[in-house]
Length: 103
Ligand SMILES: [Zn+2]
Ligand SMILES: [Zn+2]
Image (cartoon, rainbow, N blue to C red):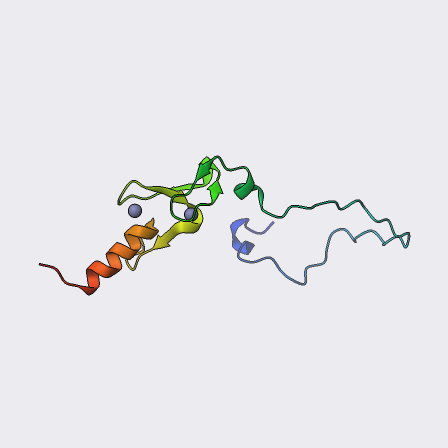
């Protein structure tokens, strides 16, 4: 047997599938695809309201800004030039602060 970790780089695209997919039955079985969800679950089930954008989001998907301790949703998270993730207001404050060199 060859070593285990050697061939784990990429999945071979043309690998022979171990199982052939079952032949499609021509009987048009229209499954009841009643998936009418206008908004994803992480926006609908949210109890918290983001102060930045006003969207409701789930508590578990919140983003805690390390700069100002503000809690926003993941959509209002911004990445600064140094790679740090902050909230929108902090990202804007940082950018304006860099422009106008105070002190
Ligand atoms: Zn938000
Ligand atoms: Zn912040």
